[in-house]
Length: 187
Image 1 (cartoon, one colour):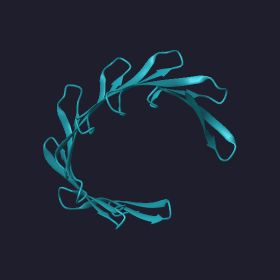
Image 2 (cartoon, helix red, strand yellow):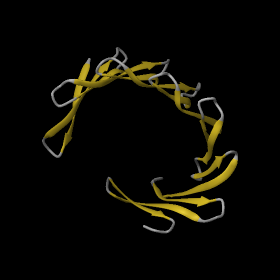
Image 3 (spheres, helix red, strand yellow):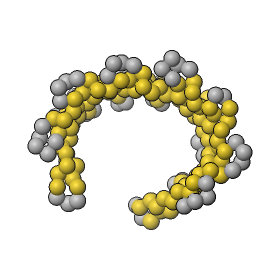
Image 4 (tube, rainbow, N blue to C red):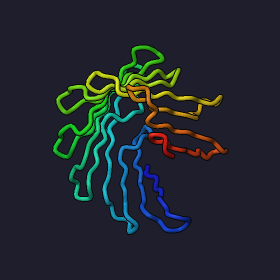
């Protein structure tokens, strides 16, 4: 089965087309990105594991040359635990891992191409607090506040000297989310 959709600018001008090709389980196995003339600019192929999450995604140009690929792994609870972005030459561009030591904690790890940890974030999903590490040293803490609908209304990034270096304020009007960004106290 194929489903075609369009991306438009304004109300009339079609910018590009997308054609999704589905497998027998109803999952996208190929997505074609076409220009306004209907010519394929590039396409993506997906492979799936046991569940509904893709574990491999490869992007090709119109000449069938691979441009980038992505690999993901999931644990037995269907949570993503590893993702890698690979270049056309199959070299690691980005490597991320997640650990779940308990129901309220997620540890995000970024690694270099050799597997050495370059960045780590420990997030408490209940409190919304994140502690960020570089070279195993804390460099920032992010504290979030949420409204009664559990939407974020404030996020502060505090450096290791206790100074607020970034603040994000959010306000909701219907389905619209308004965002104000303050860096070093400046709007």
